[in-house]
Amino acid sequence: MKKPIMMLSKKIIPDIDSKIDKKLKELNLKPKVSPKEFIAKRGDRKHRYFSLCIDSCGQEILFYARIHSNLDARDKFIAEIKFLCLAGQQGMGNIAPKMFNYGIEKDFEWLTREEVKPGSLAQLSPRSISSIVSKNADSLAGYVFSISKVEANRINFKNFDWSSYFEDPNFNRLVNKKIINKDLCDSLVLMTENTAKGFQKSCCYLSHGDLTLENILSDGDDFWIIDWERACFNNYAYDIAFLWMHLWQNDSGRRKLMESYIKKVDYQKFKLSFPVIVSYLAMGEVLMDIEEEKPSETKKRKSFCNQVLKYSVEDFNKLISL
Image 1 (spheres, rainbow, N blue to C red):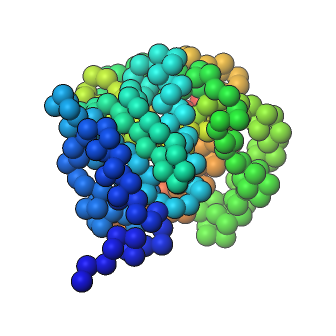
Image 2 (image 1 turned 30 degrees about the horizontal axis):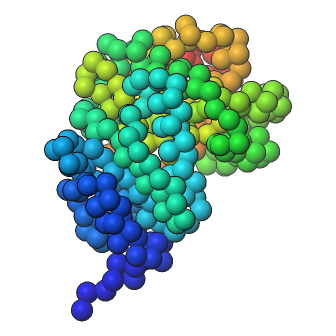
């Protein structure tokens, strides 16, 4: 006898497949993947159900609904709804797909949005990514910068938590593993201590929070940014730093993007914030081992992170030219 879906995992909201089916029928949407099928295959790994659907007019739209029964999953889903509302109200264009409808109910949140056909940059080869980002660097830099210009009420979004980094930056662990020397460690700690107070006061800008290549769609000429569930208040340079780090394999694209972005900001403020953020990100990346990554890629990624750590305290111009 087949077990009910709710028995597959304690993570899953009881009877959520039935709730989603009911909502889909109310909205006259026919999903390509049923909630029951999705939860059976991916419910433990994905905190929300999503499927391309056909509406009553034969148009394709995307439907999302939370399926995990925890506060973090709920907060993420509501953060995405709130950001998509703001983006629509403030006419932010391609900064985010258009949201059509949504609902926030007891133990159940859902939304519908437009389907953007192009795939993510993560699906492309490093050479193709570099080519697309280089060719359209001004456009992508503009989109990333415009995120920090979205006007939002601070009570609607969380603040990014920098406390663990500023209170106890774990650069000594890198020394113990012989990744960096003690002198560089001391310099990184000093930079962190000197920047901490002013930096945290400057974390008053809305941020995507997870601007990976997977979350940027492109048709080769334009971009769309998706998955706003980690939207939060942060330093305005966080998103560009996060994306810049994820372009470690894409040298020409990374440099072109930085050249375009740096023209849009206060250079002196950026010079203070950017090294702090990328050293924080590099500290985690250089310790990370990715199971599916080839040894040659791991070596290059960690070498890039080592350079980021070195130039974060030694030479800002070399850092942004990496």
